[in-house]
Length: 486
Image (cartoon, rainbow, N blue to C red; front, top):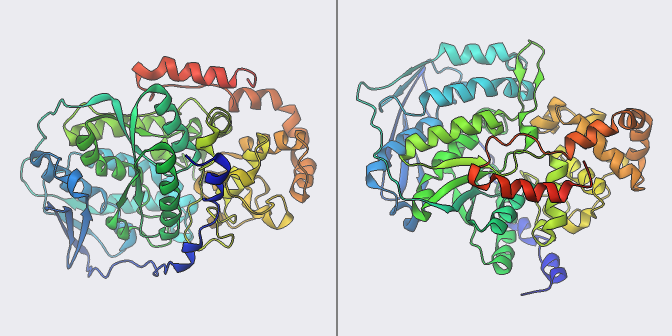
């Protein structure tokens, strides 16, 4: 095995990114005149979804799809087809009727709830004036007719074959999925990481593939890559279609669950995913509703019904805020933590590395690293993001256009944690123009609330979605790592 320094050096630069020709992301040329006729079928390669004059194919590796029960394939195809087209009236505004040539999907009521409770966040992030009101987006949802065939809805036969020490895991090399992988490994759970590639993020996928090669050499773990060709149906460059992303992924992962006989799907949703604000119309807005603990429990139920098994979807990280997650990852598992890559690259990064260093997520991770005394260069940062020109990357300074921020940052829900991170970095002696600005605007507030911040952001909170058979061991690790910080 290569030394740590050599391994790290090999994943800092990504010259192959210069060779990527990212096509302009556009909606497929679907002819729509008020009506969308939609069907979905299972095929030898996976799933085909038809919308009026266009067909879209979701291809699975042969060894994965062939091991998925034939009795389940049609039902899964119908629910995946439905989940990826439910949002189309927001993208094709002339649509009045959605005519599905399938029975009422098992996921229909679940997806309606998830979409409804995600719309306040979509409204907050939208660029279009007429769509910035939650009420307008809800009205659009209610005015469209979703029509199905009169055929009986089938429920798949129950399959009992699963192992409680095997887990499927959506994997991105972000701090959350890396810590989930590390915890699973320590707990003796064999994880099968899967990165789902979206058409809009070819640069990100290229970075992850390069990281995956080195990761496999070091940990002898294969990371599967699944191309989500149905992602072309999302609003290009916008927000419509992303509301149901993780729920879609849960369904898409079912063939892997069966192929690996896994008892779990581990998402990596942390405590902050439950935080919410109230928007200008009085609607409660969770910027990442799909990652909330309440929805994860609903998602687990829905996926078990569609999959016909006793699958459990959970998160080992539910009790923790982001600062605590990064502390445990980089302190207890530093050789895994060095792979961290949390930026959604939608263009060629000027640094040539794994971070664009020009978005609010990069800013948030950068200040969290400083707060914990971790050199950002360890995970591939190249620039000093405390320079004044990077002010727009930090939600607490609120100078960027809202579209420059990720939903969690744009909402202000994470401002206190970011403020506390600046405070911890300040106490460690980090300097720069933005630290001077922090001192002027927030130092007094941070000092006043230091005790509450420490208790909250390094505390251990709710545990609803941690599988009960793993809960005590997971919490023991967290208590050990955070005992001197609470």
